[in-house]
Length: 330
Ligand code: TYM
Image 1: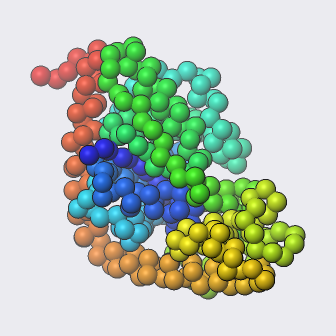
Image 2: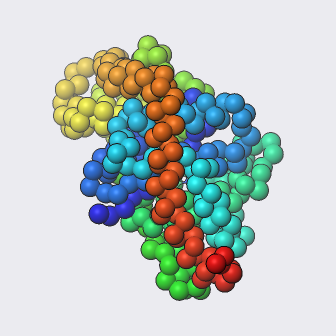
């Protein structure tokens, strides 16, 4: 079985639809035919300031969401990054083969650091830790949204560099990015991606929002001039984004939706989409709550996940330390 790996940060009270459609949905699909590793990237979360209590809570809610969205801990290894120390350890080795200028070219760092008062060194080296996350497990595919593409390229570069310096150790992984949903846009700013750190909460649909709140956000989504419901990402980015979400959540094609909305207006589209989102999210919310009500079960899933992850991660790190020339404990 080919191996897949991916991660998500616990930096918000809820995942948003971009996280789900861009990434987590593929994680669920891939767990059947692949050996899958999925984790909550709490080490990444602290690259910007976090409140300890809130981070702990959000980490649990994140795990609960992954399970509620369909990850099956029997089939997929689900774990918390900080419980597998090899991530930080390999991260250090990779930092030492990354050029300063190379790290400085990461566009997500430029965007994120512009929003911070204090820019930590950790935020700067973040993509290198991400490369370590990936390479530890030697996956073939990494299912992510479009915004992670550059980090995947760095990961491939570092894998090749390590191999050529120290002998073949890593296999450069392929990004697994689904075209249709690789970038879900902000409802208020259809030119920008839907993001946990969006300028206004009204632009993002959170899975754990009250469905009434989501419906209202959708009703007030920025749409475009004209009145026909047509898919035209250049000319009608707002409407096209709503169609993308509708199509992804229902499995109906965009063509089919365009035909169904012929003669109707944006208001009809928004109203229906509010219902579609509610139908999708309501059972997810209920399942999340059930997982949160049983913290012992959640802890058990994570303990097993960390153990399975460490078996793989420790093997890779051991080989890396040996190749680098570290004296191994006998
Ligand atoms: P994060 O937590 O920002 O996002 C989690 C996943 O959701 C995707 N995503 C989107 N997809 C489509 N449209 C959007 N608007 C949208 N917003 C977010 C992201 O592309 C991502 O796949 N650095 C990563 C976490 C990470 C990681 C890793 C991922 C750490 N180590 C190793 C893969 C492999 C991040 O911050 O994702």
